[in-house]
Image 1: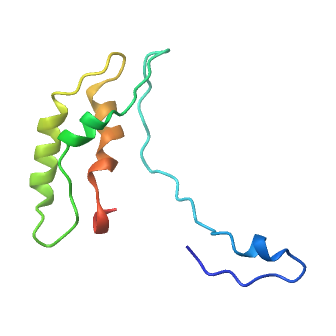
Image 2 (image 1 turned 60 degrees about the horizontal axis):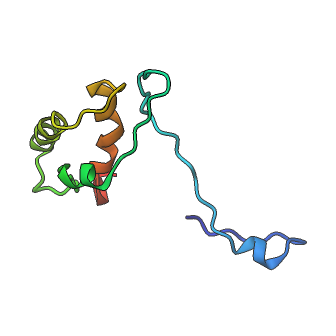
Image 3 (image 1 turned 180 degrees about the vertical axis):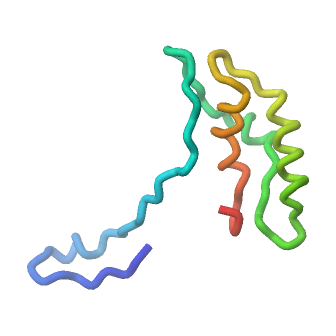
Length: 97
C-alpha cells in the first residue's frame, strides 16, 4: 500500500482510501471440460504443506510433499496438473509469497 498525497479539489475521504497494485498472476491454467467447476475447500488446504521461505525451509522437500499430497485430490473435469496449478499458491506463506 502506498502513501498518497491528497490532490487539490478532491474530497478528503477519496484521498484516504487505500490504493493497492494488482499484480496479475503469471500462472496460465489449462483448459477444462465445459461445465466443470472447482471449489477449493478448506480440507484441501489443510492437507497441503506450507512454505514460509525461511533459511531452514527446504524448497525441494516442499515440492515433493506438495506433489505427494496432490495425488489424493481428484476433481472430475480437471487434470492433475490443473489442480496443482490452482492449489500451489496457497502453500506459499510470509516471505515466500
